[in-house]
Length: 277
Ligand SMILES: C[S@@+](CC[C@H](N)C(=O)[O-])C[C@H]1O[C@@H](n2cnc3c(N)ncnc32)[C@H](O)[C@@H]1O
Image (cartoon, rainbow, N blue to C red; front, side, top):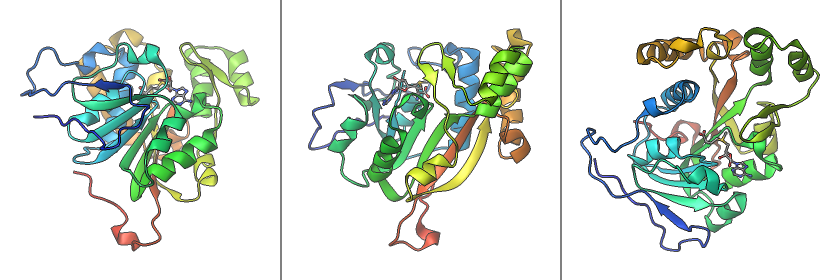
């Protein structure tokens, strides 16, 4: 499979690193990254969220807050992908098996893009760490094509309460979360929770299309030593997928995955979704 390097004619100044090599691979390339390199929790997370998104092919994709580029690299295999990430520390070990464009920057870098530049936008586990979430969501909506979709993964407060009360047996923290206090991620600082309904309220052109839970059971599991096993990972991912759209399980999942479609006033509703292969 030949990956494609995506270059705009008018390269914004913010693009200061071009990542990825043009590389021909039959899938047997030993130098390619493998999902098994990731910690067990992250591997399960990626498996589930990628299954929920499905295969994307031939699209222009933006990954905002791309971190170490694992998801960007995954979708860059078959799509023209631009990743935006402010932290050089995160980019130091970024996955670059497939060619994609890396912008080192934050929301201000998006001003270089015209309205409706992207078919699909990924924003996973980022908005919690952003000061002005509404400004970012509206800017992402601006650069999304009418009829395009945005995949947002966010922390779910109830899932964290369950984890504190059940897995970690930390009743004080569970109570603090119920009182509306935030929690902390070891690497990224304060996790500033927001509601699922905030996104459409912030930006009226985004309509919720799908809503999933992620890591409903994993974050309550005590028997962690088997989590690295591939057979366990596959079975758990299947179980998680089975319940991810059942509301009673979704409500207590550690993360929520929300997929929004950008409404188009021009197109009839039946034509607003593009085909996902
Ligand atoms: C938990 S990591 C998620 C990384 C990646 N999206 C993933 O799912 O693996 C959060 C990322 O958001 C980035 N981030 C924090 N503040 C940001 C901002 N204001 N604009 C864009 N990205 C930001 C961080 O540098 C970090 O890479």
